[in-house]
Image (cartoon, rainbow, N blue to C red; front, side):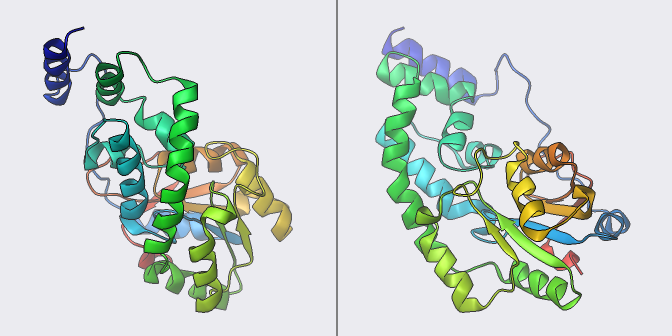
Length: 261
């Protein structure tokens, strides 16, 4: 394909003339009664790391992804990054390149489709930027901290799960210790073998906290993969809604963490 043809194809994709389905970009209204019902009888509430406990809106993480793709000559929009939110690192690179426009942008620039080897090299470039993102967003979200403390005061166990290794979370882990957040478990990629939607992170939470019935675990996440992971583990889920995106198929939804009483 010539450079002119590539440019035309990219304009066609950007204009919305894509041969694939597009999600309705709306946000479901939270249901307080449903949320309270999901929280009833919960023995442990698990918070997702990125987008919930840290980096609300995932601004720092998304900038790391944006900088990495730009290094390979591919520009990505805020909307595309938001739509790709979920387990970060290589899983997010794979989701981003599952977007037709981005995959085609790479192909036009490099005259071939992205390969597994390309993703390996991109991940090596991304890793120091993920560490920098953890430094930039090293203050835990105030609403999440307040919710964790409220739950702790009620005798409900709390945990966080993250698909990133501890070495790339170091500034944020240090900040958690300094803030004295009363967490009963911190589960990272170092403790589990696969990110959401695999259920292993929640299996590890259940094991560490000694919870017999996974249905008494509730995961709070801002992405669809988290809701699927909870379902796969036999747990329940509450989606923290993100403006302009469809709500995940979770057991309940909230607009902000202050709704976790």
